[in-house]
Image (spheres, rainbow, N blue to C red):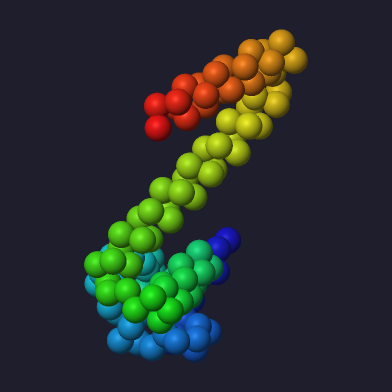
Length: 117
């Protein structure tokens, strides 16, 4: 079962995070706590996301609306990476003949894409 952290625990764990900043990230919808009988709670994934938000905000002085856009792009990239891993695993289970045809198609499509630039 996933561990959940209270607001106070999250603020104590993460450098650069205070209750006001946490609330601003929540109100900007860049992190969404889960609701438990004890109140709002955060997962390990939320902690990593919050640390990244603090770092981006501190190092690049990004406002909340920009943080939302950056996090959306990061989420899309992570989804694409997961899809690519799954595709690679699926292709790896195919016979050599099929893998060879896929490899040739990928090379051909990449050449077409490069030529269009």
